[in-house]
Amino acid sequence: MNESTNTKPVSDEELIGVLTAISVVSKRLAKKLIQLNQASQSEEGGKHDEQNERNGSDHPRVTGYCIFY
Image (cartoon, one colour):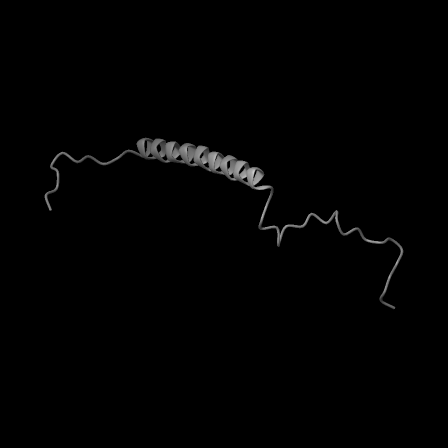
């Protein structure tokens, strides 16, 4: 392999700038993927993988009742 003779070390500021730009782009892509996923779910009629999603409101506790003595 031929190495370039004019390679210079990358400064910390340049590295921070590149990593920050990557993070910004990644965040935008993640938001777009979430929006696309939500749009496709609404077109298909809702979620299909609700097995582990519970919010607790559909199983209210009865207050003042204990089955263990």
